View 1: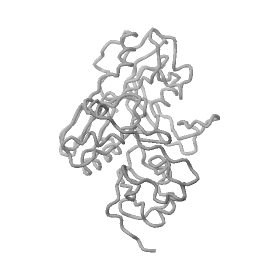
View 2: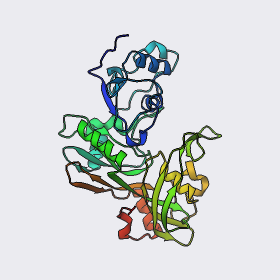
View 3: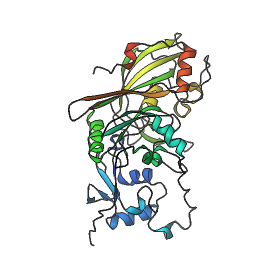
View 4: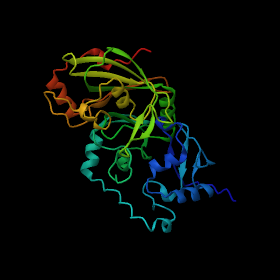
Length: 344
């Protein structure tokens, strides 16, 4: 079979939290409407490549690798190559048009920018990437964040849809590579703020609990320690302030590893689910407090990037409105330790 190169294919970098993911699962996350048979055909014909090389369905991806897709599958492309194979399925919803107002609002949320990277204060409720039935997401809006750059900015890591705060974008291909490598090697550190229902028994510590994806009785997929593919997961935390002896606590949390929903699952493991996290905490995540809890109280507060040229980029994001309201209602007071990184 002829090994045909794809010089005009669109490359997407494997993020740090996708390290170890099988290629077929990566493709399902990024291209949810692409049939499995079509994936197999694209792989057989060399149209999907990893760092320029042919790949197989079960290939395990590594952070920083580049998955190259055929032009028809890149953002703004024609869609699925072999449309005949999808004739029996309902047509995918077209991407929602992004208004000038939305782009203006998004640009106003940029809290740091230089020639290589851009840091965005992502609002709660905005998905970073698309998925099944989801057409409105940050990835579809990235052209609006070009500013003076020739290239479209690239995602290098993700935040949950309902998590707010600092999100780093690469403005060049080279920056995307060193950022992804930085997340993998822990030269980039992230600090989160959360409010939890209840107060952890130990004021400061480390949660070590393996996590993997597991489907529950209702078909809902969650991170669980009993999952077959569970991998090492560690989180550092400390109590910054509290309400009463057991009502609620403000935590500073720093993930040592980068598993999906790690902070949410580890908060639950301490029997103190994050406020508003019905998926993991159920009714306990909505306690009776002086403020009505409707949204997830998890915020990516600070990111510290060790730049390969020797300097450090240190950015913080302000609390989103729903969390600021909770801070005021619960009487949380500013503490210098809240923004400090952990000493390991």
